Length: 507
Image 1 (cartoon, one colour):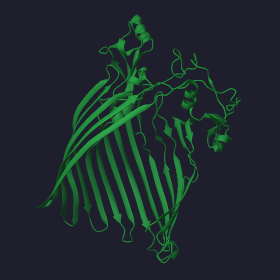
Image 2 (cartoon, rainbow, N blue to C red; image 1 turned 120 degrees about the horizontal axis):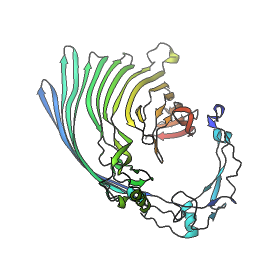
Image 3 (cartoon, rainbow, N blue to C red; image 1 turned 90 degrees about the vertical axis):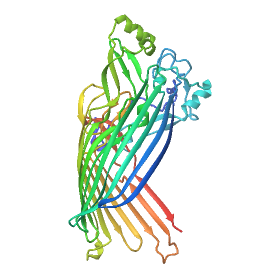
Image 4 (cartoon, rainbow, N blue to C red; image 1 turned 135 degrees about the vertical axis):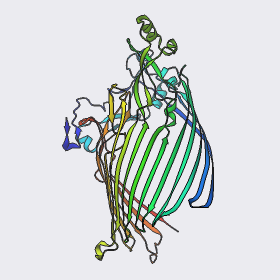
């Protein structure tokens, strides 16, 4: 059960002593390292010409070229797992379990709310690999396992883009208009090859990305900003990697992969509109709204595909292939991996206000000021959950509906300054990748912090020295995830309060 009086943590009680070295051993050992390499060659040429024509102050144009080569190489060694045990199984041990002692392990315990909730102490092996090798000799990394071949690949990406832009400056009545209008053309060739027999793919595409940005300055205090554009954002380079595994569960073929060389980039058509007012006393008020139509968004989905073109005997294990043939099963199966989803939308508004109170006649308030802002965001992405096959319409991962920040600051001419700040964000989806992709929510959070500093003045022998004190996450706010409803707890992580004291000196 969850006890709200102990940080919302479950109350646990274990009868066993997890620090008893007479019962604990190093029974198995596995190493599965990645070796990643990413090289980028790029150059750019830009030109600008000033023009003496109405409304066009200048024109800019240029070219960008990049050539990127990335590779991922994975090996494995599981000397403690046995020939027939399989990974993460604890039967058929090929070596005698290694005893744990004070010299090769330590007792670690939870603290704070976790200790209050009854979480037990446990043993930590100082260096499991070194301990194993001291008893059994060096381990040999190899690619004998299917997943090491599936997860080893090279990716090549060549991108050339051209752009042209006209910088605008003119007047409509008493309204000054500035901004720019332009077009970017991006041509991409991407490909990947994996160690798996058929895991390869390539894709070429060209995107046209127009943009328009305008600022209407009505007087010295007010202006309106307008923007319209088509934007492109590429997936992480290693998400373009080929390679997938294939299996037969006794009734259906199923494959999965962490990458897809046929992925197209994120594409969004977006509009922005904002209003800004600059007060005579130095304050700023702004109100802005935006809308983004997301044409495609990369998601992990489970799709029905036909594996008939593939060499199934090469891709399946001997047992799986024999069972597949014996049953005469269909070549139609399921594939789980990243694909270009149907897209969705994002819209929101933001309001902000910043003001120093130095214009006030009240002396005690003149050294204070505030910065506050609030934003509301609504979003929806349509996709199919990879672990359940259920059609979902969920908010864009990582976006909270409500985000607010507030800051009160104090700055005195004697060199002392202080700030107290509060940050709030409501819950948001935070995807996690484990054995399957999961879609937990991160719960809402309220984080407090402060900062104080002192600058020694010119008449001080320490002139040039600044002392700074910071406090971060003063209430030790945890990061908590849950599935669907808060009672279905996922993780609770405490990162602690941080206090930083520092100094700098300017010569």
